[in-house]
Image 1 (cartoon, rainbow, N blue to C red):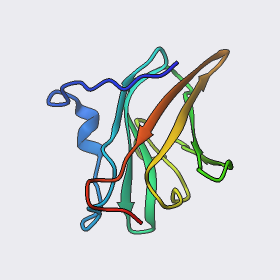
Image 2: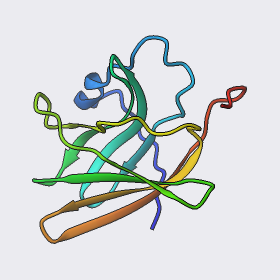
Image 3: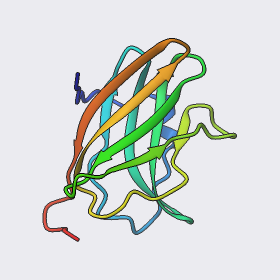
Length: 131
């Protein structure tokens, strides 16, 4: 099952939690979705510690867990758990940077209690930027 849904973010309070690091100009467009466990935006952001995958949820079930599994061209899978932030329960950020290049197919795996959901998505680097 896959989804790539865009929705109007003008009224979402959670969007105000996104603080991309200045100078991070080559990030792919965010993956926006509404699933059975969460409504969210997933993107690569720049932080003082380096690039990270970040998921900002506007709606979610209790005890949500999230993992991004990136399918690399060499056949390996890159797994990035997204633990919830201690400061913002709607902010889930990886502890490690996704490997370059930032153009890939991936799956967002969501779970809570006995429910699971997998959402396939693709991230593409902006026109003119390739590693």
